[in-house]
Amino acid sequence: MLYAIIGHDRAGSLDARLAARPAHLERLNALQQEGRLVLAGPFPAIDSTDPGPAGFSGSLIVAEFASLDAARTWADADPYVTAGVYQNVDIKPFKQVLPA
Image (tube, rainbow, N blue to C red):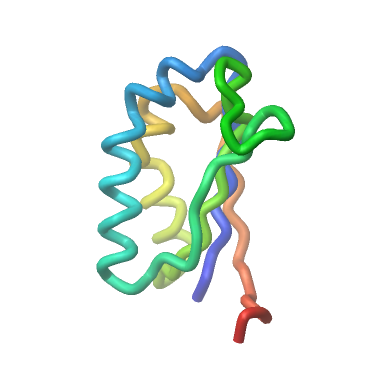
């Protein structure tokens, strides 16, 4: 089943985000190579694709996991969690309708 993982950045976490980004992307690339990643990306804190020092307010990952518990376990080990970038993470089952 698909799950939406929504990470909410803590204020002032841009430097920690940039430092943890290579390890975060490595895990996402592994999901992609396994054919389990639907999409992933950050939420710019301002209306710009390059928010500069304004940074980001969080991230969205939609990926396939065996269960909600498996998605939670995967998310809890994310470098953005362990580095303190995310203040909290929401995980919800997701039903993709489009594109089919």
